[in-house]
Image (cartoon, rainbow, N blue to C red; front, side, top):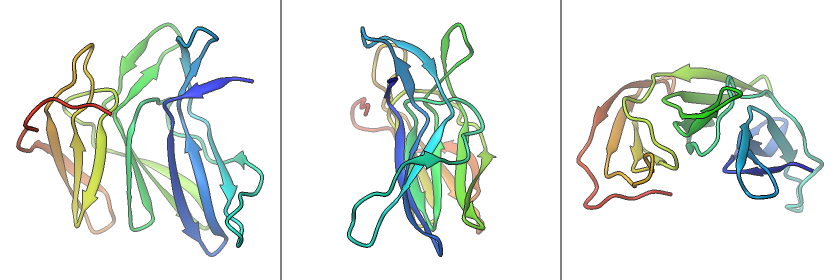
Length: 171
């Protein structure tokens, strides 16, 4: 079986039930070196007793992504930044993807690109603001904080610099 690292996990609920999702990730070889990045999304139903049903394919991401930041608000999940793979090399991703259930199916749309790209940033939503915090550059952690105002539909607006962290952080 493939070994997939650095994916995003989240839960979404609808009248069809609550599902745990696993999205994207980096496919590693037996030496723990990344060899590919993928867009696959799988989900499992959370049963009444808390156990998980079988995993099944869900709507894939719009592009391959690994190491993204992710957070949720009001039934929407945000995957931000990370890395992608073009078949020959990995590169940092500036993309923001927003996922939500539409008639019980996961649908993805693009948000605005982030002005700075890092692996392993973290993300949080507080009230109507989406924060992207820290992350890893080519070798070193960063102290960058980016802030986006969420619209009434949950769509992020332009990203702006917030006050930097007191020291660089990643993961």
